[in-house]
Amino acid sequence: CSSLVSADVVEHSFHVQNRTITRLCRRQVITAVNGSLPGPTIRVNEGDTLVVHVFNLSPYNLTIHWHGVFQLLSGWADGPEFATQCPIRPGHSYTYKFKVTGQEGTLWWHAHVSWLRATVHGALIIRPKKGHSYPFPKPYREVPILLGEWWNANVVDVENEGLASGAAPNNSDAYTINGWPGDLYPCSVNQTYKMTVKYGKTYLLRIINAALNNQLFFKIANHKMKVVAVDAAYTDPYITDVVVTGPGQTTDILLTADQTPASYYMTANPYASAAGVPFDNTTTRGIIMYEGALSSTPIMPILPAFNDTPTAHKFFTNLTGLVTGPFWNPPPRKVDEHMFITIGLGLTACNGRPGNATCAGPNGQRFAASMNNASFQFPDNISMLEAFFYNVGGIYTTDFPDQPPLKFDYTNPNNSNNANIIMTTKSTKVKKIKFNATVEIVFQNTALIGIENHPIHLHGFNFYVLAQGFGNYNPAVDRKKFNLLNPQERNTIGVPVGGWAVIRFRANNPGVWLMHCHLDVHLPWGLATSFVVENGPTPSTKLPPPPPDLPKC
Ligand code: C2O
Image (cartoon, rainbow, N blue to C red; front, side, top):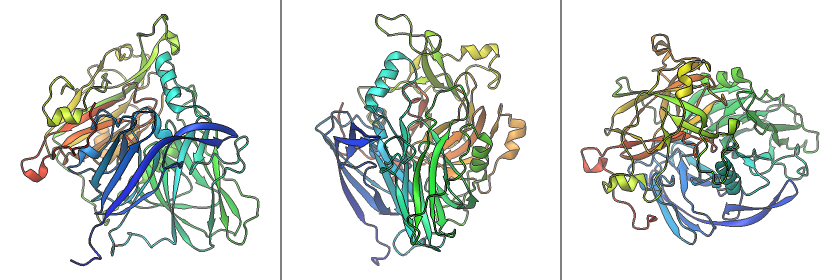
């Protein structure tokens, strides 16, 4: 067969260790891959096999997750701690090996233990196979844009202090573009990301929201952006002057340098949905400089307000899938498993705080979160995937409810049933499904406290976004709004503030697949569940045994 179509093996080594870097004029120890923030960019062509040797030289337990990669029959490489593997202990290593197939565009990789992903992350770019092209004109250059968050503190300490006190952990001190806070922050003028463009050329910006706890608006002064893919799935070209992105999501845009040669700011500022919840309300910016006009004073875009839900909703609902794209499949018409999942964020009794009767959350309680009133607890002595493969009982239970146990009015905070959605019990409830079953999930955001948009991420699959809206989901009316022709495909959906979203996917990959809120503050509070997808009937539809170096607990 011709070398033009043959797939390659792409090999990397990740040395993960602590190092000291300076941001906002302070020296801070961070955990980083190969010494860099963001970490190395990985580039593959669709169909390639990726091999990454991870050496954990840090003082922390570690895993790496390849966010959005299907991991077809390679669930052992997915990465979430205690879901598909035990952590790589300090001084140990693990080799992740998997094929990247059936998807193109921008994904990313990140640590999937505690809050380490704040600094342990990087881009994973999937280009068409050699000899194939993009479904849009070839850009002049491609530029990853990683949006992040920076703490003037050790992020693992920030998380642990929050969990110990029961309160929400501290907000970040800055947002960043490609690791740089930018010139709106104190002592940061020289730490501003800069990109040079040539007049008339078109650039592919691969925007990744790697922030821990905030959705972001992204703008470029005076320029339109053309969205061509999200979450490594092609979209119909959509022209916009603002991109909205939740943690975990990616957005590929074409930017044509067609304005008066000058300098223009690119900005990211938070979309925080609702007032009353403290969040980092600062803005990061970088500069796009036209060649020949490098010294002009940059022009600033008009920033959306932090609670500009109409702008966010317009962006999210206007995206559609590219039915002429290389991997398009129509969404399944027949549904085998109907699920309705409430996303609950609330307070629960303070317990386990030695010497202190109250917690530091509101009313002396602690924050907790749940899906269908089940607050997810990870096992800690074996991964769920090993329990699945070796048939070990007592690690998880398969009674995750298809419907919320209580009927309540999701949008009325005064409804008496609402008080019962308290997450007192932690459990490891999963949903078991047959190989190749089709699943429909209605996510309903509840309105108890901290009303906000939750980015829900599903491991192992893309799903179709059929519809989304505000208020209580009403099947009689809202099923008529389903887009079954050209819905966008994603791996992370922002479930609207005080609203709902409906997704569908086909469970064509055996293994254990986590589904969770990608706001890192909500995952340890329990906003998660998992799908256990049974093996299929033929040898090629069964999960193979784990690699010999899979970390042991
Ligand atoms: Cu990007 Cu479970 O994560």
